[in-house]
Amino acid sequence: MTKKVKDIVATVGSYTQNGVNKKRYKTVGGLFSSDDGNQFIMLDRSFNPAGVPFKDGSESILLSLYDPKQNTTTTTQQAAKQPVEDDIAF
Image 1 (cartoon, one colour):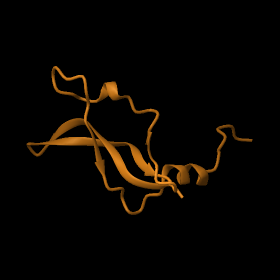
Image 2 (cartoon, one colour):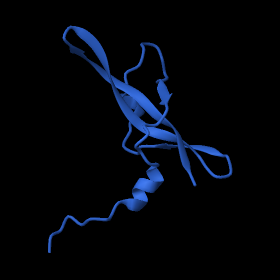
Image 3 (tube, helix red, strand yellow):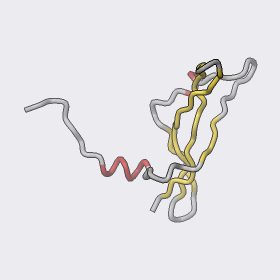
Image 4 (tube, helix red, strand yellow):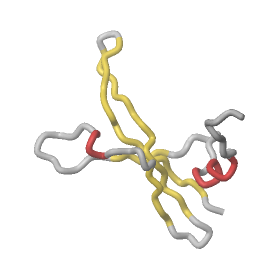
């Protein structure tokens, strides 16, 4: 069974709350481990790295790895459980 090892998170902006600067984060994918021990990354296909803030003069962005939340299932399991719905009502 495929297991999610880490969440992949990008800092996508910042905001000020009560005079304190805070960062806005988005989980953009995950690091997974398969039964045979191989690891792979799945990224949200709507994630556009060009929109992530970066330091002047840098051609790279930083993605962080965090332990996944306890109540989440793997992306492959979620996709298998969700029913297909049509937008057309009959």
